[in-house]
Amino acid sequence: MKKIGILTTGGDCSGLNTAIYRIVHGAALRGWRVFGILDGTDGLFAMPPHCLELTTDTLTLEYSHLAGSFLHNGHAGSMNFETAIETGKVAKFNRRLRESLRDMELDALILIGGNGSTSLAWAHHEIYRDLQLICMPKTIDMDMPLTMRTIGFDTAVEQLTKFCDQLLMTARSHHRWFVVQSMGRDCGQLALNAGLACGASAILIPEIKFDVDALIEHINDSPTDYGIVMVSEGIKLRGHSGRPADMISRKLTSAGISNRTAYPEHYMRAGDTVATDRILATRMADCALNAIENNETYVMTILDEDNQVRTVSLADFVSAGKLVADPNVPELKTSNAYVTDDDPLLQVARDMGVYIGEIK
Image (cartoon, rainbow, N blue to C red; front, side, top):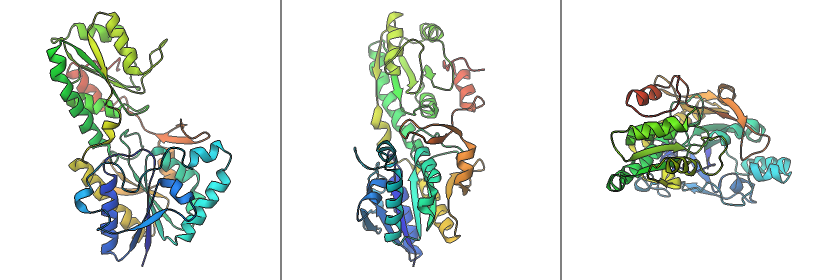
């Protein structure tokens, strides 16, 4: 009988509980035992490690669609790779994690995380050398290379779209523009997708240069005197500092355009998991369990361009992305993906009269 561990780490999102439930359900059908590790790597660092055995009665089907992680993703001040590096305790931290995994007598560990967590798993892969390591990609930023979708992204798009939908009537009532700031870090996928879905008049993302005067002209030429200006949190405006939505709002105000800012923030990471994320989480859970059966290790599940869910090596994941310094973990190079110049949504936005910046 195999013993499987599940670890959720990094930012939370919708779809995590679906993935956990499906792993547990699929493992039970195989006669395997599953243990959930609480609070991410902090739970592994604890002595003894914080964990509980999971069954389909622990996290039931009717609750598996809820947002967040049943296992928690860690808490403020927890011991993780970031704090271990900052305090010079990396060797002790890595040693303790490996000891915990050995003490739990796991055959395999399924790590559900974003690009930072997955990049860290490869950078410190010696921790997992005594078991099979299977990673599953989850992030609302959709900034992970090789996979066409990540768990949680579609729900975040839906949440942000609904948020903007609710603003439109008050925008219309007051002849006002709303500058809405999305999450996404340095990747504009969330802002781009939700901006198109809600009918934003302008979408500003980190990957595309924009001109404020052109934006103002676009708004002044709009057939309506209200609407949504979608701003990704990663955009920069030369000579200005502060929150991106505030910077754009001040420019619009100076031009005589009535506007307000709106910050959906963690609302984007909440909400019942939409059907497409539930399906993706289920497919990736199945793929992860099959990978364990096939004795694979140091792999990540992906949704490829042919709509097939399969595994790729963590080494390929890291080499496929653009390596950039991780903002939270000093000395770590994270494998990132971004909106590319040939992304079809950029041309769709322009064809639909959306100001998207100075696209080529």
